[in-house]
Image (cartoon, rainbow, N blue to C red; front, top):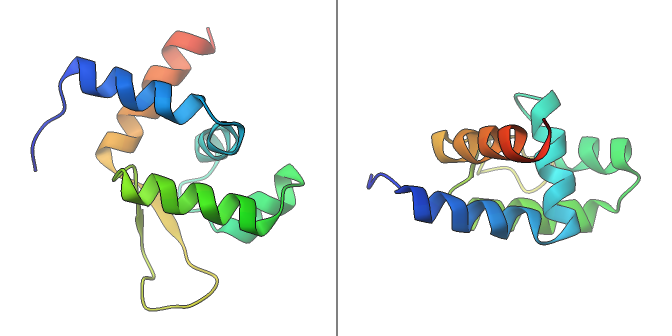
Length: 96
């Protein structure tokens, strides 16, 4: 897989924090290694559909990976290495 340069990482970071549901998802990823839409929705008092949409967006950008792609519901996700880089940049730059 092609490594991302600093500019690409910065663009992904801006993309991730530019929409509220994505911010909620990144915040949840700080506290959980493996996540499910329903768990995040419950914790954040968001709709499961809202969180599921964010998960799909993150998956399209290769920031998360589905561990249970054959399941229709209760899918589990983890951060990819790029997702971990973005989370670290967010923590370093925005949560000092």
